[in-house]
Image 1 (cartoon, rainbow over the protein chains, first blue to last red):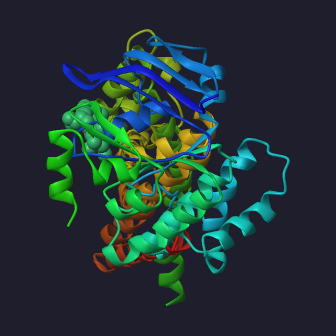
Image 2 (cartoon, chains in turn yellow, cyan):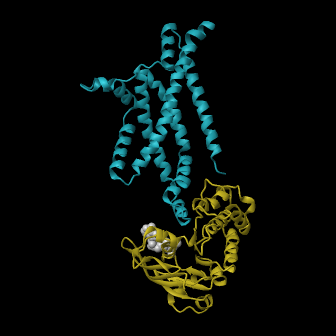
Image 3 (cartoon, each protein chain N blue to C red):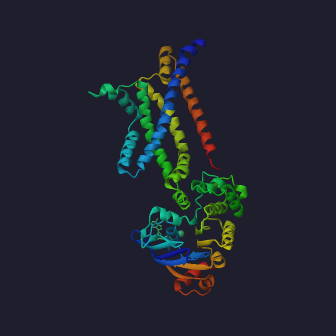
Length: 246
Length: 218
Ligand SMILES: Nc1ncnc2c1ncn2[C@@H]1O[C@H](COP(=O)(O)OP(=O)(O)O)[C@@H](O)[C@H]1O
Ligand SMILES: [Mg+2]
C-alpha cells in the first residue's frame, strides 16, 4: 500500500488555478525530490498534503486513509490523525523564538501527552543532528544551518512516518547548506520517507530515488534521477535543467 | 529644615502615595482588561469585534481629562439616575484611568499579535498542537514579549498622567506642591514634585529594562 496517494488534486487561489489535476503516489522509504521553477505550485502541493492549504478538488490518502475525498474534507479528528503521520520542515525554520532548543523539541510531545521518555528522545535527536551542546540555547543565537537542524529534530520528535521539506536550504548561506543536507541524507539512509522540494540539484540527483518536475501547476515529468536528469523527455524539463544544472 | 520637611515634603510624599495607588490600581486592572478587549476585537463574533473597536476608538480619540471630568462630575448631573452615579472621587478617577488605559493596552496587544509570523501558527499546527495550546504556549508569550517596550512606555505615561487627579480635586502629589507654592511664594515645591515624579519614572524604567533583558530569549 502506498504511504501517500494523491488523485486529481486541484487548488486555486481565487481565479488563480495553482494546481491542476495532480496525481502521484509515495511508497514507503521513497525519497522524492520535487523540482521546478518558482511559482509552479511546489509549496502549495506540499502544504496541501499536511492540510496547511485546503484543496478544491481531488483525494489525498495517507496510509490508505483519505482525509479529503473528491474535494470533501473528513471530520477534524480524521484529518488530524492522517496529518499527524507527517512532519514538516519549512524554508524559514519557524522555530519558536521564546523557547530553548530543548523546549522547542519537547513542547509538542508534552502537549500531546506522549508517554515515551521525552528527555531521552531529545538528547538522542540533538545528538543525531549534531547539536547536543545547544540544548539550552535560544534559536536567535544559532546560525541558520543550526536552526534548520533543530527544526528537523523537532519534527522527528513526533515520530512521523513521512517528512515534508519545503526548500529547507533556500534561506541559508551557501556554506551552511551542507550541514543540513547531510542530516537529510542520513535520514534517507535510515529509510525515512521524505518529500523534498528543493533547488539543490545535487541532492535530488544523489539522494532521491524519484524526481518530480513541476511547472505551471502540473507534474510535467517524473522518474528516477537518472531518467530525469540523464534523459529528460519534455522540452520544459530540458529548458529548466539547462538553466539549473551548471 | 525640619519645618520644611513637615510642611512641604511630607504632604507631597503623602500625595505621592495617592499617585502610586492610582498607578498600581490602573495598571493591574487595565492590562488584563486591555487584553480582553484585544480578544474581543479579534473575535469571530462580529458584534464583539465591532463594539470593542468602537470603544477603543472613542477612548483613544478623546482626552483622558475630558473622560475624567465626565465620570467625576458629568455622570452625577444626569437627571434621574445621576444620584446613583455619584461615587467617591478617587474611585471615579481610578475607573476613568482604567477605562482609558485599557483601550491603549488593547491597541498595544493587538499590534503584538499582528507581529507574530504566520509560520509560528503553521509550525504549531504541523506539530499537532491544538488551537488553544498554540495560543497559550506559542502566541501569547510572544505577544507579551513584543508588547513589552510599548507597555513600558505607556506605564511611564500613566505615572505622569496621574497628575490629572489634580483636575478632579483628588489631593495628590501635584496638589500639595501647588498648595506649598501658593503659601510660601516659592517655586521650589514644583521642582521637588518634578524630582519625585522623575524618581518614580526612573524606577519604572529600570524595572521594565530588567524585564526586557529577562525575556530577551538569547
Ligand atoms: N496564500 C496564497 N494566496 C494567493 N496566492 C498564492 C498563495 N500561495 C501561493 N500562491 C500562488 O500560487 C502559485 C504557486 O505558488 P507556490 O506553491 O508557492 O509555488 P512554488 O513553491 O513552486 O514557488 C503562485 O502563483 C503564487 O503566487
Ligand atoms: Mg515554494
